[in-house]
Length: 449
Image (cartoon, rainbow, N blue to C red):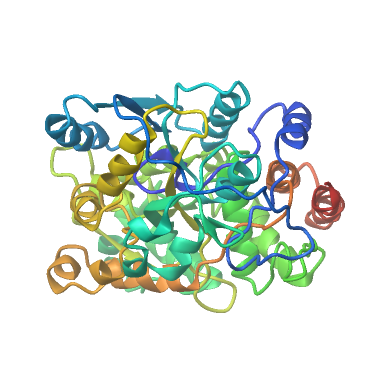
C-alpha cells in the first residue's frame, strides 16, 4: 500500500503459481523479514558485514516503483531533473500488484541488472533484500531519521543497520459515507457488530438501496494477507507470536477469519469484493457503491476530487478500523527507498533519496495525494490537520499498527496465508479446516532455512 503507489499493502508471493513461487522464494530468500519488533532471534539470518553504499558515480539513474496511480511522481522527478540536468532520474513503473512488483525486483536482482537504481520497496521486503545483498547499506547519519516516526524508521533496518529510508508510511483506515450514516442516525462503528447494524439502518433508506456494506482487499494477493492479519489482531490474536511461531490455531484467529468468511455468506460484503484489490475498492467507493471501505489514506484525496470522478466528494469521513470488541488494529504499510547493489551512479542515487524522502517532499505528497508522511511533526501541524482532519485518526492507527507476520521465508508464509484464507472466504473450506491447514503450512515456512 504504500504510500501513494499500489505497493500500499506490501508484497509477498504472487497471487498465482503458488508452488512455483514458493520454490523461487526458497532459492532467493534467506532473510528474516524483521523490524525492531523481530529483534535478532532464532529465525534471524544475519548478512555479511557491509559498509554503507559508497558515494561514487554520478549521472542518470532510475526510480523503480509500483504504478503511480496518483499521477504525481513524474512531477517530483521533473523538479529534480530541472536542477540536475546531468543526473536525471527516469521513472520505471512496475505493475499495480505488489506481488508482481516483488517478482520484478527479485528478477532484476538475480540477474544483477543495473536497470533499477533506486528501489521503492514495501517495508516487508527490506530485510530479505538486505540479507541477499541485493541492496546497499545506507549512511543513516545522512538522513533526518530522528524526525521520523520511530516504528517507521525501523522498517528500513536490518540487524541494526539502515538499508532503506522511508518515503511514506501507511495504516489502514475505515472510510465511511458520513452523509448516509447521519441520515440513518448511526455513528462510525468501532466493532464489527456495530458496522453490520449501521449497514442495516442505511439499507432501509431510499438512498441506501443497492449499496454494499463493506469491502477491503480480498483478492488472493498480498492485500489478503494484510486484511487477514488485521482481522486476527483486531480479534485479539496474532498470526505469528513473539517467539516466531505460527499462532493461527487460536480462538481469536477463528473469530477473525470467521468475520471475513461470514461477511460473504451473509451478504455484508458484496460478492464482487472477493476479487478486490486497492484500486477496485477505491473505484467502487468513489462510485457510491460502498458504505464502508477498508483502505489506505491515499483514497482521501482521490475520493474528494472535484473533477467529477468521485460521486462521494465531501460526503465521507474516516475512522479507525473496527474490531471484535472495539477499535481494530491495522497492518503497517508504506514504501521505503533503497539503492540496488548492482546500480551505477550511486552518489546521485543517495542525493536523490535525500530529496525524495525529505520532509518538504513528504509535505508535498500529503497535500497532493493524502499519502501518510513518515515525519512526526506533520501529524500535529494545525494547518495540515485542518486540511486533512483524518490525520489524528491516522496517527492513532499508525501508533497501534503491527507488522505483517515476521518469518524467515516471507514469500512462502504469505502464500500459505493467502491460500487458506481464500479457501475459507470462498466457501471451499471451513474456517477450522482452513486455519488448521494454515497453521501447518505457516509452521513449515517458518521452519525453512
